[in-house]
Amino acid sequence: MSDLPFQPVVTLAGMILRREISPVDLVRAVIDRIDRYDGILRSYITVCRESALAAAQEAEREIFAGRTRGPLHGIPVSHKDISWTKGIRTTANSRVLLDFVPQYDATHVRKLSEAGMILLGKTNTHEFACGDLKVFGTTRNPWDLSKVTGGSSAGSANAVAAGLAVTATGSDTGGSIRVPASFCGVVGLKPTYKRVSRYGVIPLSFSMDQVGPMTRTVADCALLFSVMAGYDPLDPTTSKFPVRHFDTKQSADITGVILGIPQEHFYEELDPEVDAAIHTALRHLENLGARLEPVALPRARDLSGVYHLLIMVEAFGNHAARLRAHGPNYGPRARRRISTGAFYTTAEHQQAAQIRGLWIRELNQVMQRVDALVVPTLPFPAINLELEESNLPDYSWGTRHFNLSGHPALSIPCGFTSGGLPIGMQLVSKAFGENTLFRIAHTYEQSTDWHKRRPLLEEVEMYAR
Amino acid sequence: MLVDLEWLRREAANQGLSLTDEDLEVIRQKLHEVKTALATLRLEETTEIELGLPYRFAGADATDGGLGDDDPLAG
Image (tube, rainbow over all chains, first blue to last red; front, top):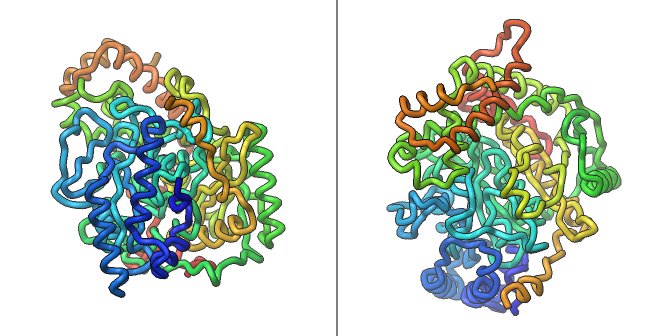
């Protein structure tokens, strides 16, 4: 099969400009892989075969006529199925929305389309970004089919990892980009709150939701982010703070960068292989010129209940009318989790908001002294599928903190277990400091080869037989 | 348990929610866990944190004058 779907966007864009390949070749190559592997991996809810090929032909005509729109022109992108796509059903993996066809595109979908990207399909997600994967089948981890992908941007992560997508987008309310990125060995960015428009994205929690890219390399992530980010009059929470492009050529140096290492929570009770991988990565960052500085974040341990209360109160606010009308059509996990938000008191909500404020203050004080924090994305590698069914683990263990605070956070691969499962490292910077994350992550990535590994899909083929 | 199943049943009905007893039992356990955790986190003194603060958290832009545009590596 073609190797094209695994190539970085920057490489593919150069090949297209030099007419070594056309966007049609690229889209066909990805669709071939979808046809071969999606029956097992369940990356997609909807594949836009015909419209993607038609868009690729149009892109080919434009580019070959010299009317290129930039490096994303002719490159396929797949969007999580909670992002509205004009004329293409958007289900949120729920029986409640099985026949819902939006009349317009979400802002990030529109922006990437205007940059010339080709909508390849809608990726699988946990129901309403917080429930089950029942309606369209369970996503599987391409590194080991018996393991979870994590979620809720599950299909975006496993599609990028397995070459069933070149690039993808996801949403992240407590880790839903970074957790599956870590489990599947790809790059995933939760941007700063306010940085990317949520217009046209089915909401879970208005104060924590963010939309971001999921890619195979940091440079690709930065490229998509630079298009997705920015003020949107249709989303009044977005910032007018200018978006600055990240230049990989001028940024591969982290000499003198100060990296904060939290002394509480984030390095406690780690799986031994995660512990070894993250400490090896820290030594590597030191060797690249970064300085490690221990920092105190004692409130980091206290945020599980605070996070759960705030997210579910907001989620219930969003879903209340629909739950009343269609509650039995929700899957049990989404129905129960969201309904929990109906039963907290106002006093408890205000207490949670106060603790959130104190956490933000504590974190901001630390961020004044460092350029970024480095922590494991998760304390354990991907778990068995059956375990997730019986007892949902604490997936947001290392990620919810930065949804509560709004800071940008990036997960990149930093190793593999002896069983071949990816391990993720999370970098967190000051508000609107995405380029800091890209600089550190790109420098690390270019001096390691984790991002070059690919899952062996013979197991998928055997499974299919 | 901090939350009584019968109270949950009545409150769900009052809010117009169609939840089964199995749903309510799962919800009750989660409410107990979160409410218990919050009870251990009560603040010991009055804080000057105003209630609006959590929602102005990442305001590094010129429009709301928050933190953050001092990133030496950005750009």
